[in-house]
Image 1: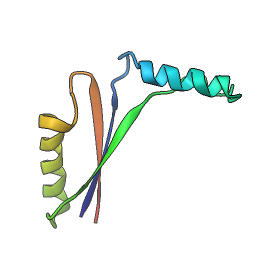
Image 2: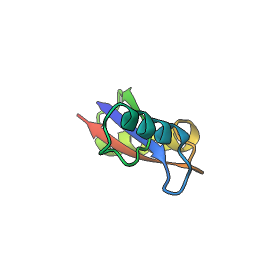
Image 3: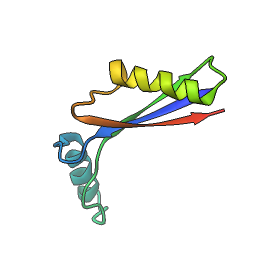
Image 4: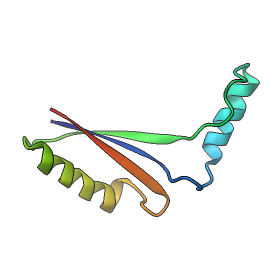
Length: 80
């Protein structure tokens, strides 16, 4: 089973990397980009066979290590 964790900054948190990405894209001729937010994706291969249990364990991982929940939010996708 695989868990994919999408982590990004919460709304309202300044994102200097996202701002730099948007500015650079504009400089390269992609003027249609008005803003960008930068995040990260973590893929975990799990031994767990039960999707519910896997999601609960990955949530614990996010709360303890993977995400800084003060400024970041996360979404977990479980794939069989």
